[in-house]
Image (cartoon, rainbow, N blue to C red; front, top):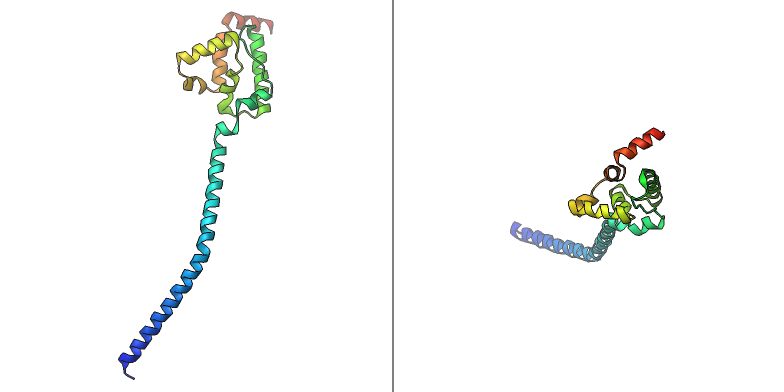
Length: 160
């Protein structure tokens, strides 16, 4: 047999083997691809549910805060009442699991009468995002300035 003939036969066998391998790979891929697609969809749907539940608005609500019975604040009963309210509302923060970034929003949600009027004026003076963006400590400081005038602070210091 000539070298040309044996070369042609080897090429034909290699071609035939390549086709068999390609056929086997294709057959296996048709089995595996649906499983891979299913797993990708499952992981994708889990991660989208998790990302939605990670947002602060979805994880804590004013309703959860209110269930713990926070005391209302009017700003009309003097500094002692305000300090008592501070203590009370901080206990409510702990009981309800209120996150730091939502404490001002939830605390001001129980303002009434003069305190609500003052808070409305503060929100109008600035803007809602800035006002509600205050930390709890910053809100306390503003409330101290508004509802605890210097002469009242002096009176409290003299008592203690």
